[in-house]
Image 1 (tube, rainbow, N blue to C red):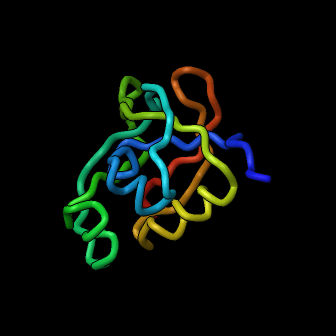
Image 2: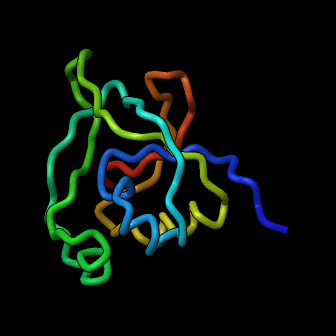
Length: 115
């Protein structure tokens, strides 16, 4: 019996890439465009060789809260399983932490932000 996807995960970066999804989850995720209000995006350098191999880059986007009330970060919201959430946790490096946010659509979703 396979677990039905029931968890929302918001991605503004490499978890949207087909190659990262295949290597992390073993499938392509289904999702829709959304945005995360109150956050701003910047870039960080990743040093984990497995993450660099999976994503094809050593520079990845990262988000943090913004003082600008109009700030928002665009991305995709995916519906995943508990096992896939654990795989996403394993993919993300220590620079990120997972928190729950309310997206522009009203969906409550997990997202990785600056630790």
